[in-house]
Amino acid sequence: MMDKVNFTRMKDGTKEEYEFLTAHEIDHTRHTADRLLKALVELDESLSGYQITRLGHSVQSATRAWRDGADIDWIVSALLHDIGDIYAPYNHDEYAATILKPFVREQCAWVVQTHGDFQMLYYGHHLDGFDQNKRDRHKGHPYFDDNAEFCERWDQASFDPDYEDLPLEFFAPMVREVFARKPYDPEVIRPGTREPLVNDAEAARRRGA
Ligand SMILES: [Fe+2]
Ligand SMILES: [Fe+2]
Image 1 (cartoon, rainbow, N blue to C red):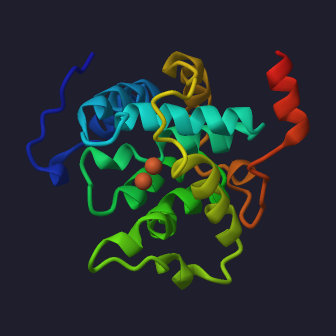
Image 2: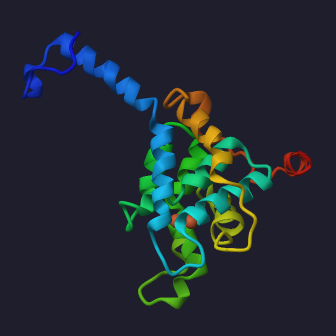
């Protein structure tokens, strides 16, 4: 049994070695969800100054999505929407979307990818060099209203230290389920399909549960 390849330049690798590496990669991929959950906990150390940490903000956004009756794609997207803050402070939205894109509906990935432009509505007017209406560049996009609602209901509202968050562990099985999906499965991506952020019947059912 091989435990390491022999080549030092990729072009010298053999078929057996590349098959061996592919098997390794598949094993590595299986743990993506757990790595992301660990990274979320690291978000706890980032961005001081707010009343809650980035981890608290992430969990609160996901909790609001869950209480609104949103589906699993929305909930996991809300939970991970700011995960890019760790390594990509200037395009954290694109970074998070890149992680989500193979595994969630196109609608959710687009919203995460551009939420930074939409969030500016809430603070851009207070700062020099920021455009409060930056979201207008997306006017006419089929998911424009979904992003406006995402930011209004879940993102900009989730900085409240007194809100009763569900624990991160509550969301862990949902993250595992989403990242165990077949990547880029057309039945998941469903281009052009819009699912509501708010589902009152489902929200009522969850409240009763
Ligand atoms: Fe963000
Ligand atoms: Fe956020």
